[in-house]
Length: 630
Image (cartoon, rainbow, N blue to C red):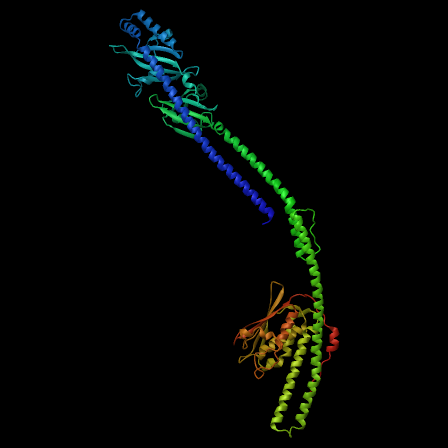
């Protein structure tokens, strides 16, 4: 991975870490804010409920005080029992005084058990029938207010104002219940939200009351009453619906009548059958968190911009010089030692570039010295090889004459004095003749081995089928005598020296016939094209095989695995084969199973890979063949 990629990965990791930190911080802060709002809403609900109970309790105390006035009781008895109109006026006057004493009272009235108004602070309502009023129905419905208990009812007037109706049985000491004393008061004191100690503009407390099986009446505050009114139990009003049905709890993801997400606490007052909701808009609750989150994202964007600027600076000041240095090193590794790094800075990278240039120059100097040494040693090696080849030829050529003379005279000695020599002398002469013949064979083989490189011709297109045909013709007598079978598959055209290829195949097939063992020789030649474009040849036989320890030794010059009394030869044939194959830029090897046969494998080029001209100037000296003595 490149430095640039690593820097990008590090930048991405930093961004991911920052995002994770922001996300985790947002979750933690959100949970903490939710918890804090929950506690605040609980506190508001508790304070508001205490206020409702306190207001109702004070009004009931006032109701008790009014109903306990003796003049009211006496005059009401006189009116009910004796129908004294003057007593009724006095009752109305007392009730009017009670209404005026409390600013929030809208009306104070006494009604009969049938709902008829017996007396009222509002003279227009005298003799009116309140039987259809909500408070009267609620007191008298099954499961309503038990006789003798206080009753509380809530109504909303035509102006969407909350009216609280407090009722209580009106008793006169020593008499039966004469009816109900009722106070109609404005519910303004119940609509105001208590001081919660925080500047939460959307904080709202709502009083609700269940109406019927599926209905719900919203009592306060007026804006909620105006916005929602009497509604059904839809999911969008979930907190108020729960409160009206008597369910208490905390809803962190509720939706109110406006369709706005809120956090809400619901409570229920069983004895009043009132539901209570304290709610706060989520937008306001999490306003601070959103601001912090926006700041975080701004910081993240700035951080990304800073990372990008830092990357551009690093790329310009570090990565590009390093990249140029790497490109220069690549060109130098490919052999172009003229490349240099431009040095235009004085920091560590500039120092590195200067050191690199110095190292390259030292490499150039060392390479020049090495090339000179290689050239000198190559020339020296060529001279040495030429001298060795010349020496081998001269030595073999010069040795032929005295050897031929020795052989000639020994043969003449054998012919002229054969009858005069005893049996031992004749045996010794035979040994001398045999030794001189073997010496001649060795000299011929050495000369042949030296000529593989010195008398080689240039590589041309050669048909290996014709090569095998020539080999079969040369070995015809040996093949017929051994009753051998030489088979070959489809053979290709290769780039090579036809004379040397004939010599190569002839040596291998001749060895297969010679080392045949007791079975009839079977030799098979195959060729297969390799992926590198060269032909892989194999020459397989069913002969005696070769032990594994000797499979490399047999390709060395004068190496024999058998005595001369078993198999004839000088041990130079496979060494010649190896030299021919190597001259064709290939290699030869053998696979063998002792007693079952051997397979010699070598490769040849499929196309012309180069030329190796013959050493014409040496052929002038080495071209003449040495005649043998018959």
